Image 1 (cartoon, rainbow, N blue to C red):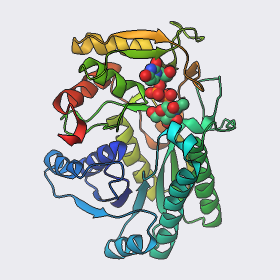
Image 2 (image 1 turned 180 degrees about the horizontal axis):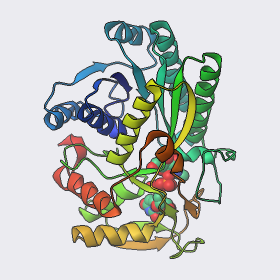
Image 3 (image 1 turned 90 degrees about the vertical axis):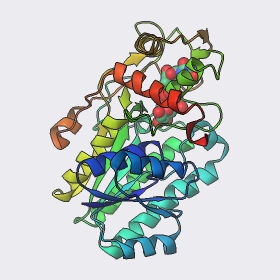
Image 4 (image 1 turned 180 degrees about the vertical axis):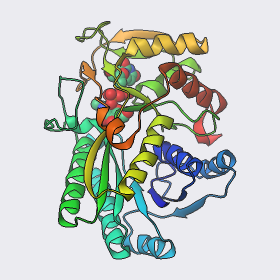
Length: 338
Ligand code: UD1
């Protein structure tokens, strides 16, 4: 298959690129490098041993996207491009809705013009809303979202479901990611947050490397075994393989499917800290602080549908996730900015 990866230079996009090439597919990366580095491209060439086809374009730029669709014969699109910071989305809702919806609509228009009918969308478990009944199943009726980022994912899902209803020869997978961490085992690509990390694992790796003094654990009075928040952490390479499986599935199936990509296993913040320290033999000083607004006790997937429909399940362990996150951080103390 030949696949367009919108936002393919980002954290999940770059790992998906590698797994697509490993599986014998062709991929074209379209990214405006707003939140990604050009260095990713040479790293991808090193990992795969093949030249990367890259288009520096904004996915909401219709003319640029038309030209890309005209130059290639795509079988499918995987749509990663979008803004992704929860806190920033609260401060900049207009920018978030404009960007995260325009990119999807432009892609859909270009796909229709070019006769491309398969799309995999990068959604998030955040669309389930503040629900307290894990494991989360795709058939659950989601509660209201709690921030514009989450709403933008939810509205994108709605758009793509409606598109598939109106055009029954289209197929679409809405992949709801749980908490992606880890990095490619080469240590050449990984997550590269700008400024102070919002998410747990990038914060831990920066504390372990001495860049930050200590981890603030947001609350230890949750209704969980050790009182700290429980999440479904998934290795980014497993997640990437889930996209390959979804693309392959879509080629022979019509209609839209919502699919969780998680492990089904919940780990607490302290489970992660302890595993990280043990596996990497490095200390992670931490302090328990106030709860972070909006956080929930437990949030983990029922991953049954992905297994049944796609034949995919996560294979990597928490130890793999901790080891690979640390290798990436150790080899690239300043991310791609070295
Ligand atoms: C967050 C986003 C979610 C997004 C996901 C991507 C929020 C409210 N939700 O999920 O929309 O899809 O990231 O991975 O931001 N923690 C600490 N100290 C820290 C950072 C985190 O104790 O410095 C704890 C949190 O309280 C939580 C767990 O670690 O219990 C995971 O937090 P995080 O990595 O931010 O992910 P989520 O909040 O689950």
